[in-house]
Image 1 (cartoon, rainbow, N blue to C red):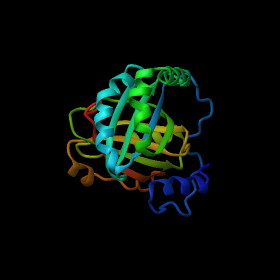
Image 2 (cartoon, rainbow, N blue to C red):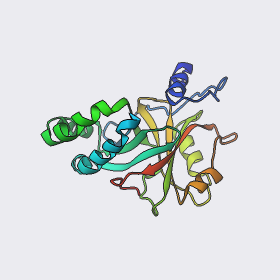
Image 3 (cartoon, rainbow, N blue to C red):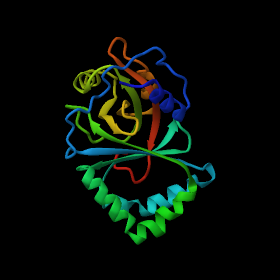
Image 4 (cartoon, rainbow, N blue to C red):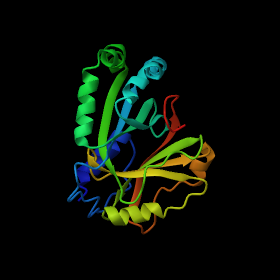
Length: 233
């Protein structure tokens, strides 16, 4: 069950007013019998001091190749709307054990720590992360072309299979659903959809703030612009 305090904490973090008052989310991505050997995805959000954004981007462009040798990067974006001076990235791991090994290897890499991570730490005033798994039957896709991206955080009154069915049937003209996940650690009752759009205008024209009578409600969205090193352009 999605506790009211969880929703309030999530909404406060992203700075928007509640649209869920009085709504009860009864199942919300039950993780019963979830295998620890399935692929997991880590959603990371860094908030960068505005004065440091330029050097953060330059240094990241120089050294992100080191990080990408350790595990698969799905995408890395600048948040244009829905969060200012934020960078958002999604990483894929074969399992939680694989993630632990990657983190250990990075911590022991003097080039990564000394030339990159130790330098960017003072430039960040907040870091957040959540571990996610894909909703059943929804693959993680490559982008069909260059464009812009949109993340939609949502809550659901349904279980994983029913939620996946709703998400797969969302129709948005010229938009491509690249993946949809549910959180297993972090904001555990929050789901995420990642969309590709040919341009910014298509994001607005096809915006889905709520899905009437579907049990799925979008609570926050971001317009995302890909960084130079992002696999999704």
